[in-house]
Amino acid sequence: MDRPNRKSNPAMKRRSTASHKSPTIGQLQTHLGTNVSLHDDNESYISRLRKKVGSGLILSPSVAAVIHDHEGKLLLQEKSSGEAWSLPAGGIELGESPQEAIVREVMEETGYAVCIHSILGVFGGRSFRYTYPSGDHVEYVVTLFQCKIIGGSGVPTDSETKSTQYFGRHDMPELALPYPKDDLFRAF
Image 1 (cartoon, rainbow, N blue to C red):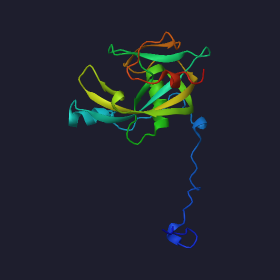
Image 2 (tube, one colour):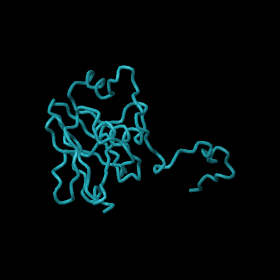
Image 3 (cartoon, rainbow, N blue to C red):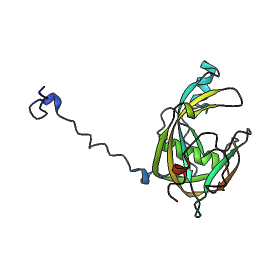
Image 4 (tube, rainbow, N blue to C red):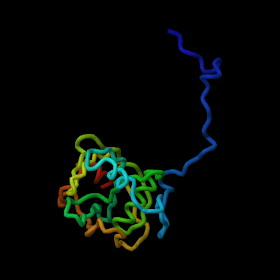
């Protein structure tokens, strides 16, 4: 079977998108005090969705941060609701990029401003299903970012966080979602 020739067929020529240049991941940073709210009422997309679908299973595009201290210990968040420990993480709001979402979530849940170093992976599927104490069911698709602290107070700005603490690979508690430890400690 003959393949179409891109040179002879104008419809097959590729269009250049070089006029739109995005910053590299390493260049994305937050500024302290930046408000990323996308809605006047400050109600999250998930909250509005839950009002329509109840506690049934929903798919949630989300982000999580891997942040290490100088000893290679991993920063974890203890939830106020008594749930299992977790990485600083959360849902992507409408109109928000994953990069913007992780910067916002880390600031809210830890009080730290971060820059993104790299993407460690994307995780999801049945093993990333979770049932909240409220009975809400969710299946996450999580973009996992390696981040570095560049500022901030270390004081969380939302009520979801009871505390934050650094843990080594062998003394960390079980997490709410099954991230592979090799990915969490890849840099060390």
